[in-house]
Amino acid sequence: MDNYEDIDKINSLLHYMKGIEPFSRTFASLTKSRSKWCPFLHGKRIDHDCYRSNPEITGLLRWTNKYIACCKYIDTDRHAIDLMSEVLAKLQNPELVIDRKGFDAMLADIRRLISFVENNVNEKLNTLSCRECERLDEALVCFQNYCFYSTVVMAVSAVEHRIHEMIKRRNPTLHDRQFKNAMLGQLVQIFDDNAYKEKKYQRIKRLMPRKHRPLVTLLNEYRVFSAHPKEEKVTAQIAESVLHLCFAFLTDPDTCPYDKKELKCSQPQQAAPPDRQ
Image (cartoon, rainbow, N blue to C red):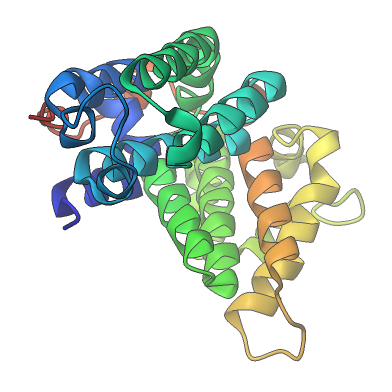
């Protein structure tokens, strides 16, 4: 049976890693008591049926799979991501694990790769606010459950939130008077060279890196397709592309308006996943 507390943490893994602990510690906790796991108590070779159904194994695979997905969207070292995916594929196949020694060797490979990318993952997470993590976590859950319209809506809502924060911090009075209730479509227009030409908007216009201007326009188009009853179909390919573009925008330090205090996670310090007995 699934551990519902673990599922909740896996579903919010971006926020969990940002506010509770890095994944290296989570992974260590998940595997600490592996010598007592049932698949390794049947002799030198593992019991394949036990391995497939064992909750400690299935939980570990679920956590690791989600971590690899987060690394992919955060856009850390792609070679390391591919290597982690290869090792995970082997761990998912009992025929390739054979015995405890082989299992431990694969875990060691993943631990080394986690250690290799961890600083970069933390740097990317430190460009995201808690609210943005929550929205992106929900977008990833939607994508994993084949809810592609919802994926786009939730991911792009994080971008809309970020642009509001960028404007509000540069000119809070102007934001409250004119853009407080603006949707992404109106916010995108602010950065159009042919709109909002008055002097009072010029400092705001400079907030948006030029390379991201076509990106946010595209994101708004797909948000409209997803949130309103249009004829356009949002496929898995589109939803995944939108996720990548949203992460690219949000993890760019040039679009991050927050100071260190604001980026510090405010969620309570929960306990790590329990040691597997």
